Length: 155
Image (cartoon, rainbow, N blue to C red):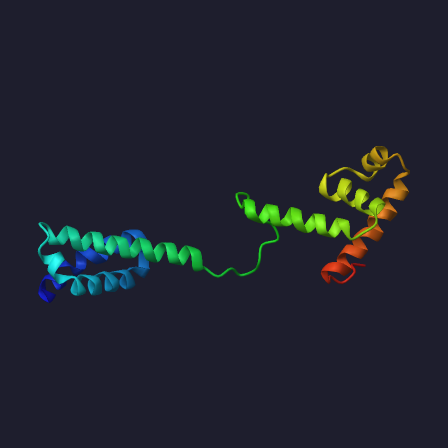
């Protein structure tokens, strides 16, 4: 049985390297250990070489999924992945929490300018106030919100 595995090693390495590239040895080792543990079902299979190739393919795909999931990031991204619905929902909750912690006029100015992307003049027109009022309310509200999340005041 071990001699048969030795004969198959080049084939198993090629198959694993097609999937994983240079990290193929771990997948080959995992597959060989599985084959040795299940020697009865493997050797009684009509095509033991195909069984072995499938075992290394499965091990390689499992390793690939684990590497994708466990890859450390150099830094935390400042924006959620576009398809991450839960991150968007959590961000909306956090925005609502922070806006509810400041006075209503400040929250309105922040919401229109920073969330809805209005200009200061556009927000002033919507609120029916002078642009300076919107600018001051927004500045004071952002300062209060930064204090809530523990960020140092900029400038």
